[in-house]
Length: 384
Image (cartoon, rainbow, N blue to C red; front, side, top):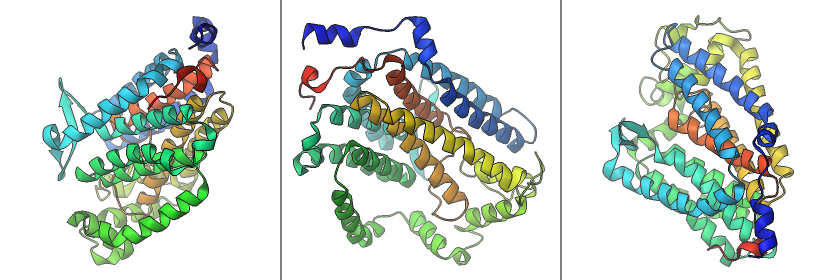
């Protein structure tokens, strides 16, 4: 690396300049969603901050501190750490079947020093960072060549398979979508995705036989909701009833009948959107979705203006991740996709999911704070 180039990307803005460059508007939209989530969890607990609302709010504040701390670190540091971080996340994911805690028929959590976390959520952040590093080095003319597409496909396939093994179909789907979307944003030609889609359709019969019984049942009920209304179809049926009962203006804060009478299941996690929509109605749901769209649009705008490939893809990866979580959760709550256990970001209860998303935002903020202070291809050499 040339000395002049090394000195240029190592120079760092002052503390005050860093604070000024933090995207406080982006954090404000995230805070609005966290407030909605805290109020919803307060209502879920019948007007109590325990056991969910208080923890949710504190985790968001911790997440804000994490965003600022990560933003203060130059993106060149995160670029260097991205591959080791991916390796550690992959190792943790591989250890889940051995060391993980079993709940609801699956092993998804690991407990260390009394703290439980989901490696699959951390893996999504690690995958974004690793792919961004890979494409930061790769010359544009090589992006769509098969030889250079294989490493990122392997990076995506490994966590997808490990998540599927837990079993955690939701996280497997999210890793696949986030990874493929990152490849597309990096410039991979569209016809490769068309061919991949056709190959995936051809493999569907094979994949069907490798699903767990409860996963197949969920898909069958999704295709025919009346097949098992009191069993596998109960969640979707009650969610639709709650959404419909909310109407245009909603039933009022803490006045939702489906949730108050405990007809609505998992209302603090998977169906937090349904809980909120029953109380605040269609108008409230539009407001919530407005904050989501504003956050995603703002992040995409920041991504388009990023001076380096690594920061551009990390910022876009946060946007894609946030959008995918939201679309899958709302589609799940409205019966448009099978129930796969995906939370609504910053609204549903779940510490690892929230902190991993906030950490991804912190990576994006690092690029905003430090600008182009990052080594270019010819300065860093091969990274694989």
